[in-house]
Image (cartoon, rainbow, N blue to C red; front, side, top):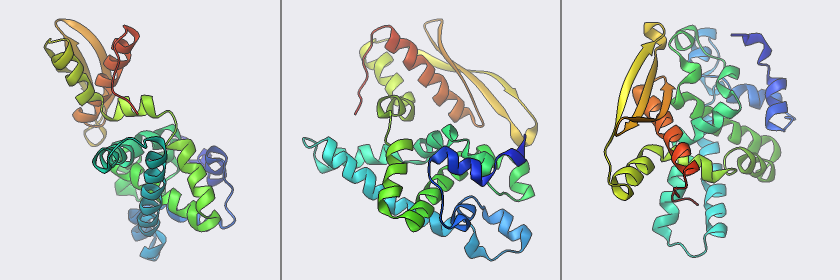
Length: 238
């Protein structure tokens, strides 16, 4: 990994926002394992910014859904918001930015695959929102959320709910059986990659890879849904 090319200046270019106080962005990218190793004050890791960013994200997502879906009741809006701001959803968005590569991690976290762990990258995504909010206000934070989280929602929703969508389509509509098959586990013990396929009556519909079997199945289900969508099947969407 070319760690030194993933600079904060490059990250600013990717997110389209230049910080007046770059220390906020650095804090957003700093994991507690790094501050512990470097004997830095705990307050300088991303956790407090994550707390703030979570609140900002929930407000912006709530307003978006309220404006876009005037016909839906509170319960449905709550479900939709939960799927948009859950850990897998934010991690999916973070991967588009390669956010994990910019993180400051301790050696232990680095060696156990922390850069690609959904729980960390989703937290950092929220921390970046918090940092932008403090540095540039709500308007700039909302612009970031609109661009990187609330865009392309149809495909993202298909990915977030891929396993349940696939089950609903194959068993509920097509009335067929399907299964996931573990094809291979590669990589060292501390950084395994699971490779999975999803099959329907002998046909492989999709393949996926991930740091956990569940993540690989989600990717395989997403690939299967894209294939079935190309064949003319329609899925629930925003």
